[in-house]
Image (cartoon, rainbow, N blue to C red; front, side, top):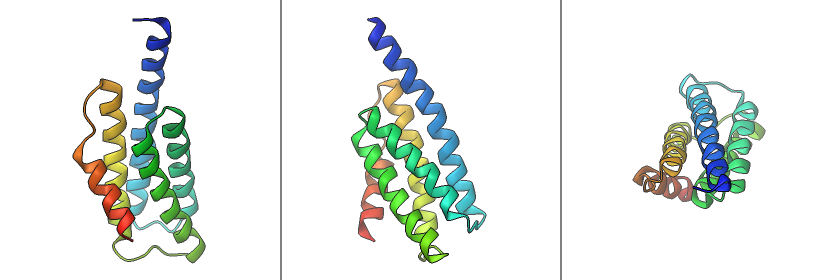
Length: 121
């Protein structure tokens, strides 16, 4: 393994840990009924940026959809019906997707399901 591959693996491993923490924060906030959607949006924005930087296109797209919904909720002061559970599920799928990418495994099916749900508006 080259030094660059080793560094890439270490960075992806660090992102897997970061993604788990950020996704847990998003899910916990939504599951407990928070109204601080801006804080959750910032978490999704960070996930979107890092997934994009790491070349994880579908995961970046998923994080971007989460960010968009949370931005809308922050502006409106409330989240659309059923959207909190969908974003919470998407956060879990995203964390699992980053973990799979780090381990060199296939993308979990929940990533595709969550993308479809969040696209469906």
